[in-house]
Amino acid sequence: MRLPIIAVLFSLTLALAGCGKETPKDDKDKKGDPIVGDGRGKGPNTPQAPASVAGVGTPTQQVAQQLVIDLRKPEAIKLDRVSSRFLKIIGKPLSPLPDDQAKKFNTWEAEHWLQRVAASIGPDARISPPTGFLRGDAAVFVGTFESAAAPKGRYLIRLVEEGGQWKLDWFQASVISTEDLAAGTDPFQDFSAQAAADLVAGGPMDVKDRAPLAAAILSSQVRASLEVNQPEDAQGYDYKRGILATRMESFLGEKVESYARAASSSGDAYKLEFTLVGGAKKTVNITLVKGDAPGVWVVDEIKH
Image (cartoon, rainbow, N blue to C red; front, side, top):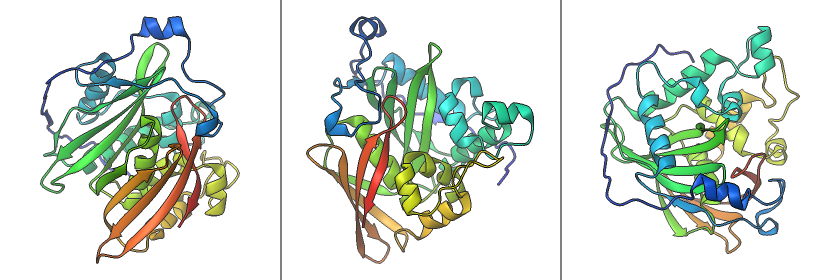
């Protein structure tokens, strides 16, 4: 769906009370990359350095906050501030042009995906500064927003360091209330578990805009079980986007009112209990494995 650029006014509630700690870049370089292994092993088998708090006012948090501000501006966000990985997720379908085929993303599609997601939050939204965690070359944040259409919502944002610059590597929004019953041991696992739950729970993002994120957060094994894998086509898709969107809409059977999540002691497994409109509950258990980039976790098993 192609929408015109939407001009929105944006205001932040800058509650700059206190600052968290953030690992200085020089220290990180002296100690080496804290991510151990090739990034594809199971959580318990791949030791990780502790994540440091990236609280309000810390350098990486300020980058995340500014990205959210700029995302809401009429001219949208400059794509040189978006990671190459994320551009390939949201910048589809590709055109037949050689440039699109070579870089594996379509500039127009990426820009308009970002604009649609920003617009889904609401033009009157009051957005809080995000807070989160940093490890090596990746950082994850959660922030909240309020609007007339969504009295209480949240957004998830992930950054990676690429070419000496912190860049946007993930963004999504949700208005479904949630509760942590048992916190996970790692904020990057928590981020992926919450992202996966929000994607299947529903809006305000259109399901067609959530589908590329779902394809990226599900392992090939899970996508195969959903029968949405396919050989990469000329438009750049290695999944059946329409079928995946349909699977997402029908997965829980009814609209979601809220959900709670509880992490296992190892941190790589989560129990998600969704409360559906009408009061029925549905429990989904997911297992995470490390993805193809530092700090990325993907869903490798779903039981329900």
